[in-house]
Length: 149
Image (cartoon, rainbow, N blue to C red; front, side, top):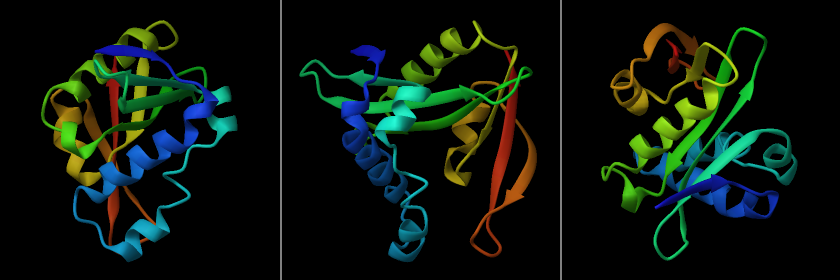
């Protein structure tokens, strides 16, 4: 496995991974349509933010994460997705540990908006839920999580 800085040319592939990974949790077509723009990475986004991907032995991209400095106090983990067929094999752990090594060079605190299905994953790595933020879907909330590194 190799984790490397991603390039804008991978924007479509990374967007597809994000969408397939989100769909893995059984969300409806209606909700997936609402999130289409949120799950799309542009070339500009990749060029202006920290985006890293993990490749398997065949050099296929199987997951990625991205973050940016939201302000002087903290970094925001914006994306962390693994292709569905690779979920549960430790690749998310590899990515998040790589993320920690990058993030601690820039700030002492990380924040993220977690998918409710991913909240437990982040808790395993020391994140605490600090609030539940309403979404564009009535009655649905996202856990806002933070961690001091």
